[in-house]
Amino acid sequence: MISSNTYEEVYQILKSMDKVSVMKIPENILKNIIEKRNPKFKTKIDNNDLFKQENMSIEAMDLLCWITYNYWMNDHERSEIDKINNEFYIQLEKERCKKYNSDLLLKKERQTNNDRKMNALIIVEKKGIIKNIIDKIKKLFRNSK
Figure (tube, rainbow, N blue to C red):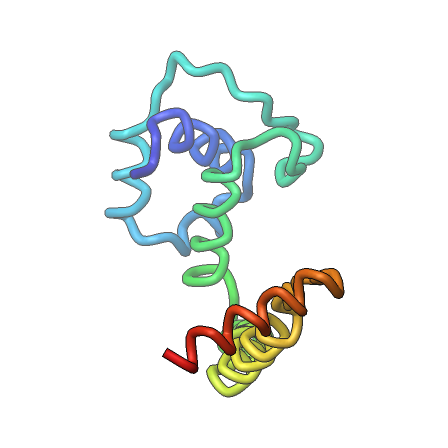
């Protein structure tokens, strides 16, 4: 949900722009911006540098990007943006598949289990010679019964 302060920021930027650019935006969208804005909000918009990032919120920048894409760009510019976005999402998907590849995850799990088995402690009780002789004598008596 877009805040009323964001609408005010966008309104102030549009107010400072040339009329030809603003008139490319549909009337219902302009009306929506005007109705939902907060006129009491003091913006930091610099009329000399309207699109300076430090002067507006991220929401306002997003809304202006949406307006630019939908109403101010021509078809060629839009297709270039779409191409860049598609390449980005394809690369992102490749990285995700590589990171979460089920074969690699299963292979790592098997390797981890093997490592655990190999690293298991083997406890060897060291008995003295006398203890071994006594145990063998007891074993002989048990077997003879």
